[in-house]
Length: 183
Image 1 (spheres, helix red, strand yellow):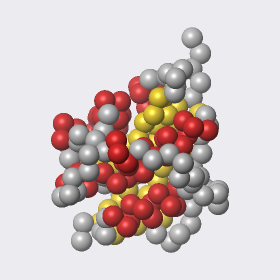
Image 2 (spheres, rainbow, N blue to C red):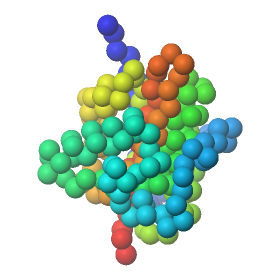
Image 3 (cartoon, one colour):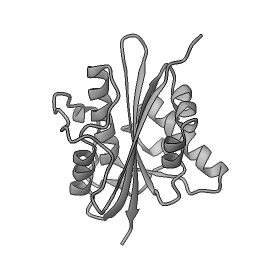
Image 4 (cartoon, rainbow, N blue to C red):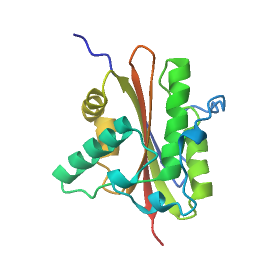
């Protein structure tokens, strides 16, 4: 059986430099109703897998895979960020709709995260990929130097996860990594 995995990565810093196209994200997909957003926003402050009710099972599996990998390297686990997960979910829906991978609108996604979370977010990065299973997506990302760098980024403190599945079973994942200063 052949595995086709296509991955893209983008990194952004507070100085405004990024590696994405200038095209804007289309707002045609709106899964906000899939999230049961709490008024307290407790997930933005860090949640365990069992506490994150708005992640689906595949997103929770990806969170576990990412954090288990980080722990194996002596790195801190990433806390789930609710707004980043919402933005990742929207982007995965966009990827599903176009049957493609891209980082269009990455800066806009991070701007939306910053509107909701007023803490300092000096660095952010994004991985997008698709494969037939969560494990294959994860292994494919680890097999790519740039994507592994995002997953293993010691400066990152939070993650947003979004996943959509096509009718043929192709899983589209978006991972958003954030460095949040807790000041």
